[in-house]
Image 1 (tube, rainbow, N blue to C red):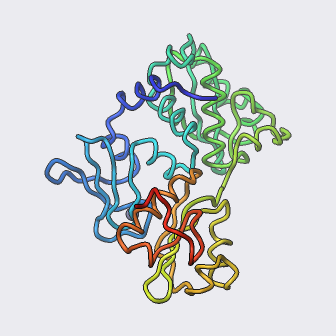
Image 2 (cartoon, protein in one colour):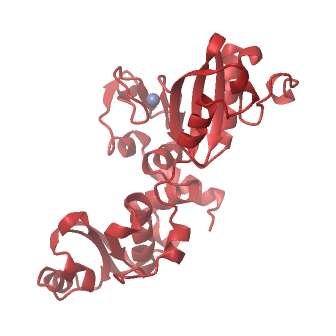
Length: 290
Ligand SMILES: [Zn+2]
């Protein structure tokens, strides 16, 4: 699964970053930008700003920033491809171009006990009647529908299944059924493989003794951070013991760690910072940094 550069640009051009981000956090206009409380660290300032002109966001507190895909990746805990797909489905961008247009409707139902159901129909009124009277699907018989959350018009079954999978990625496969994944006792092995739920993968920044820093990336940040504090991390954090966790954020892209490390080195100097793959005390400064 991949998207062409043209398709990615199509998505980016169809979205106003300030409007998309405003679905998740409260933004206030300030000059030519918008500001709000950062959703990625414990922000009281507000430190988070969005530039409609540049179509990027930036937090001056924790340092996170980038385009709308980067925001969705971190907010929803998605990888890059899923973030693109999510924006396409949610905003119904160029459905023809992405193979999602059809003659039916896809609906999202909120059910009892915090469950959800996603379905496809070509007769919405009749299908809702069935669900709400307990004749719709096994899942909506077991958990009664409370309300229709959303209806996407003019779409197909591929849209239905892929939307279901994104919901599963975000909220866990236990609470949702829909598309190709409707069985209550479904063996979720194949779905789980696709749906890497509740990941703890990301970048963390540690402040160390003597005003040194370390920036790391791990599939399990919390255990990696514990290891550094326990003196089982790397050479650099054994020499300079961690004093505190500056910040951490979820991402599946190790390049983020590289970028973060480089920006810290630029700010605090090569003598005071290690991170990414540069973990030793006495290594030569990488060319990319000079
Ligand atoms: Zn922040």
